[in-house]
Each structure stands twice: as C-alpha cells, then as structure tokens.
Length: 526
Ligand code: SGN
Ligand code: CA
Image (tube, rainbow, N blue to C red; front, side, top):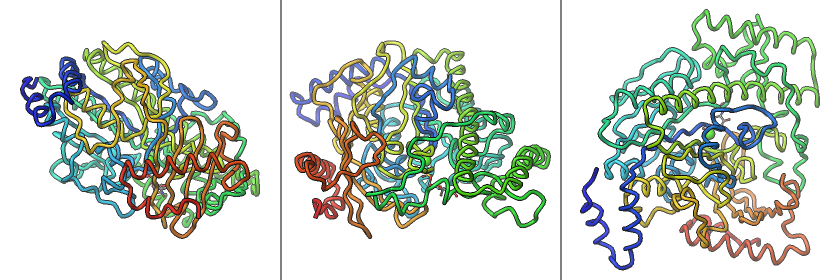
C-alpha cells in the first residue's frame, strides 16, 4: 500500500480547503483498495442478456453479477464503435479529446494520460487480455496478451509483449478466460491490488460458435422485433445505412449458407475465419452447416421469407456465441470465489456498445438510436458495498476511468470528463447528477454507411440528433411515446419549446466537453 503522504503531496498542490472533502474520500477509499476485474465484450447487447431482457436467451452467469450487485439501466456509450469506445473507456474522455474518433483511421496515442497508467501509479498491477483494437502497442499495462485487430474465433493468434505472435489452440472465449485466470493465479504480483481487463472478442461478427454449441438454439424461433420492416420514413440517414439484415447481411459470410461442394462458394473472408480450424474440427463444422445450407438452397427463399430466414440464422448463431461467453464469465467468477478474491474484487461486465438484433431491420451499431447507444453494465460489488438492484442514473463509458481511480484511492485528474460512479455503488443518489448525455459518431464514409452525427439524450426521454457532413438533417424523438424511434418529430408544430430546450442543452454539452468540431457543425437546425 502507498503511504498516506503520497496522497497528501498530490492534494497539497490544490487548495487544501477546497479539496479537503475529496481528500478524505480518497483516503477512505484507500483503506479498501479493491481489485477490479473488468470484463468487456464486443457487440454484446442488452437484448441478449437475460437480466435485461428475457425474450431471447438465458445468461445465468451474467445475471449472477447483477444479482450480487447492481444493474445500470441507463448506461450509454459516447461513440458506438469498438476502438472509439475503448479509447473513451481508458481515458475517461470523449473521442475528440482522446483523439481516437474512428476505427478506420485511428491509432491510439499511447503517450497520453490513461487510466491504466494512473492505476499503476497508485500501486495497482495492470493487465489486459483479449481484444485491444487501438492499433498502437498498449501502454500502462504490466502485462498484455492481445488479439491482433479483431482477432479470430478459432485457433486465434495473440500478440505477446515482445511483439511476437502465438497461435493458440481452441475457441477464443475459452482461451481469453484461461489466460485471465492464469494471470491472476500465476503471473501477477500478489502483494498489490490489481485491475485486470478481460476483453472478449465475442460476440462480434461473423458469430462463429464454439463447436460444442453448434446445435444450441437450433429449435428456437426468435420473435421478430415489431419494427423489423421499418421503412425509415422521415429518417434519411437510417434509409441510406447499409446494415439491413435483408439487404446487406451476407448470405455466406454472415449466415454461412454457401453451396456445399462448389469450389467457388467460399469468399476470402469466410475462408479466413473457418480456414483456421484443423481438418477434424472443420469436418464437424461443415457437417453442421452443410445440411442447413443444402436445405436452404433447396427452398429458394425470396422476399420476406428470405429476410426472416436470415434473421433466424443471425439470432441463433449470435445466441450460441453468447452461450460460451456466459459459461466463461461463470468460470471467471468461480475462479475468483475459489481464490478467495470475491470479497475484495469489483467485477464489472459491459460491452463496447450495444447492437441491433433486427430492430429497424438491422444488425451492427453506430447510430445514436437506443439499441446501440445503450450498453449493458452490471457490477458485482465487493464486501462492504451493500447496494443492490437497478441504478437509474444516466452513466456513460467515460465514467469508468474516474470510478476505478477513486476506488484505487488515486486522485482524478481534472481533464477527465467522466464522473466517478462510486457514490452510486454506495447507494447514494447525488441530486446534481447529470440529466443528459452527449454522443458523437465519426466513422463515415465507411462500412455500413452510417452518416456522421452527434446529439443529446435527456434523462426524461428526449433525444435530439444532427446528421452532418454530406447531409444536414436533424432528428427529434420523444422516447416516452415512441420508444422505438420510428417518428422523427423534428420541425413538427408543437415541438418548438422542446427543440429549443434540447438545442440549448446540446450546445451546453458541446461547450462543456469542448467539442469544437461538433460546435462548428452545429447550425442549430438551420
Ligand atoms: C468489421 C465488421 C463490421 C463492423 C466493424 C466494426 N465487418 O469491419 O460489420 O461494423 O468491424 O466493429 S467484418 O466483415 O469484418 O465482419 S467494431 O465492433 O470492431 O467496431
Ligand atoms: Ca464492438
């Protein structure tokens, strides 16, 4: 443990009087320097997690986390895409401040201040295992073992700390868990508290199941979301996006409905994924999908029947991938229990963003609409934190960094834009908690063709968004009346007061977060 004067020195630099309460809080937190196991998955959305939504799958182990702690029901990302989300998370800052605005052109500047570096400074051991996706070599970690780019489901490669790669045998979710447990058991300095980032590849496209679960969910028919056949009326950017299950989901790459036996049926992408299996496993995989593909080819589906077939295949394969994920979260919890670490460890489960499971007819994310603006967030609380149940305050992924820093008893630098969630974990409901969140998405032109946009969502259920760049469209939603965001009421008579209120709030947030680009594009509806 760090000596008290370490905190004192830091705080002395600030006005003692002004920061005395913060100092007392940080010293108090220091008494219980909990470990943190941060599990973040890829594209795992709340609709596919039974503690949030029990229509589709059962996730008993994920639900255990929520049952022994809290479930955030208003949890949002700042920019619904992998690299940007990860950068927001480890810096506690919006994309325009951490510099990583999009996957396609981003290289994370690892020389900047990050939460893992500050945790190290506070005496924590830091490690990350799994998907990294920030391109540059991780900084601020005592240990890392990461997937190159998106990584692979089968027999995946890992990048070692010396820059070499090792091809591991097995299914990626199992391997990441094995490595995480191995680090906790054998590789860390047990005299120090630790923060371990377990970053799963699951459940990213193209949803390749663990072989033992190939047949799971095959007898289940998933209900179509009520807005599956959305016509995108009044929503230009939604109309031009290329993420419709019917139109844009690839019948071979995504749903594995190739023509068995033909030499030309497999695209390069598909081969890159499945070609990693050894011949025995490949035979098992092919045996399963061949029969489905033969049947599919015989049926010559078209129109809605084809769209709905694709939807079922998508849901089934995604659900299988979630099943392995849930098992492995269970294994992680069991390890913590058996190692006697549960009482002293905060376990966080979240995803880099939400995802569409057929809502608006879509897969993928990116939009500021609810399904992908939301991200699951549940926490198993250590001994001493007695809060249980739902937390309704609006939280965002820029809040994780200050939360962990406060738990570590470390000072929270003033340029961090998020807010520590520790008071919420302690059962408090601060009166001045944020009443709105800010969002800004940049990756365009790019895959899925989602136009650039920013916006504000208020805690009382209103949302104002501006699509800009090669488009200039505003959208306004009343989520209380229109939870699925089917009716853009921007510009409609009677919405003037609401629009003005949200516009003022949007500008306030753009100024508060110093989003100069956002402000520049904000023509206030003109
Ligand atoms: C890949 C996927 C996209 C996905 C992005 C970003 N295509 O490019 O469908 O939107 O990743 O996802 S794929 O053909 O390679 O599967 S993210 O979660 O990493 O941001
Ligand atoms: Ca993702």
